Image: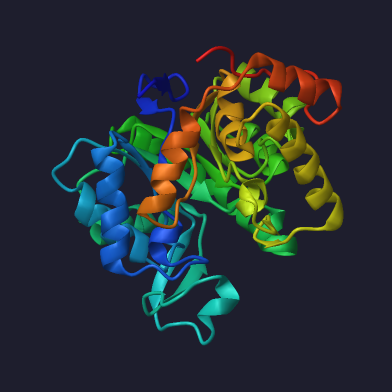
Length: 330
């Protein structure tokens, strides 16, 4: 598996990783045994980079991931900004979860909250290290009007906590795990970040970060991990986009992309999975397969040969940003 460097840290991660949201029952009914089987299959396939968060099943994803990674050679990213408190939520489906653990979330991006979350994560994982730590879902998309307060907490104390953990060697890299461009731009103004895990914003369907965010990241030495390369499913034939039903214009563009891929005999999902890595700022792509079979399909898509002419055709039809770097060769 090819590896790329995270920021300027020297930490190398696989260009294909495993996203941990489904392992917590987020948007899928997956029990512990099925989650463990999925992780084991990823390990047997040679994957070493894994991502999780307290939000995924209110700790479920962390528990099974920690159990499966313990004693192995791994690279792990985990997230802070949410503390888990005893007492379950009334309707887990409102949070996109099936059978979460009996906790609820309290947001805290301040110094003490970040330090507490880091320690809690290690306890739930049952591991003695997390390789890089990401402030999770900071931004207007999650918090609306409350984001000004939360971002202020991150700027005033949370970043300092994360930086201390990095300087002390408790983690090797720090960053954000978010679904929007603007908060990454804002974050570049308050600190020195190694990596942004950006979900759903740099995909075959959308390349909005190319105009402003990516040039700023390149100048800052901040690399990108692409989560949600299938835009929640629309690029693998499902009707979901950004965790909701896709609007007509998104469906139409996905169909147009699929028509071009079909003309070259390439699965659209293969092009979607490989496209982000054409940009050398992107260190890894991390889909979240829902079972062992989906993992195997991702591995096949990841190694599917894609002719250069496919990318040329997409650009000529205005379906791909004209400045987007694209993969070349096998």
